[in-house]
Length: 362
Image (cartoon, rainbow, N blue to C red; front, side, top):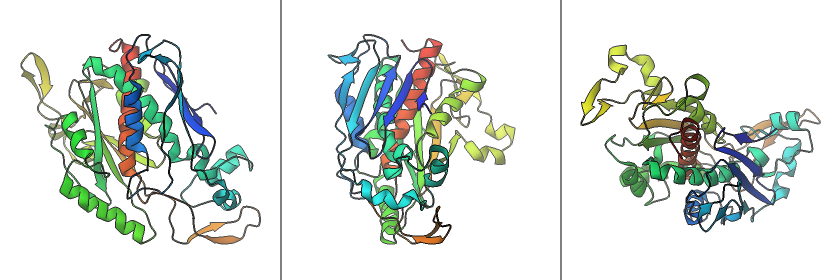
């Protein structure tokens, strides 16, 4: 298995949850591109659990270690290699799961595919820890897009039954600055408080809760994307489903489109000064796999965290006996708030790859 993605902007993730480190190799960044390492660290800081009241108690500070590819904040043209060390590892807690798979986890199919000696401590390569390389690569990709005027912002749109509606008129910088004022990642402070209550309630019950991250990309040049297999939706969805716990994605009106008539779903065109725009954006900024010039809008659904403190039914793979399993360890009762920056990252990677391939990004 080769954990790689991309054509012109290509990434390969390395490491595992409880191994020495997790990292990424990034190929395709043009020589001379300004890459500020401090911005990559800022993105990692948004993902890490340290300092979050409602996150896992695993204490990973995620200090970026750059191995090659950037000197004096400029790309050298060689592959960018970077990693962070895994500092707070407790492998012994996972020994039992070698023969008793955890419900909701990849333990069982991974054992069949990789063999009984595969290292699945902390989830191994299937762990949410593997989003660290995505954040590193996404921050680098986002810096390729800045000179093109492309801006990306994601936010927590739903936790359980609590949801927020953010007006289309909000610019990415407005959304991000408001969402970053608290750990939930929701740009509405009052609703963020209710979301925090949902997470706290699940934790007290020994349970977990899922949610939705919405992402908006402004400034895409008209025509960016490739028809058919490499459409904008295809690239973004491919990357979105690399994020552990993602179970669904929709663009624009998404599944609501199934309830509409064509006259309702179609976005009417009009002249907005010197450019063509649409009065609505139910297509999510994409037609035929290509950017329309309107904001790319998509939402990613996350399942509840699989590791919960409640008893669950499982089986012993050796004895075939039924087992009542209680998962121990340090786990997020909801991964959605920490996934906001990850969704921004995969959007940046997809756009950078398509932008380089189509000549929109240099």
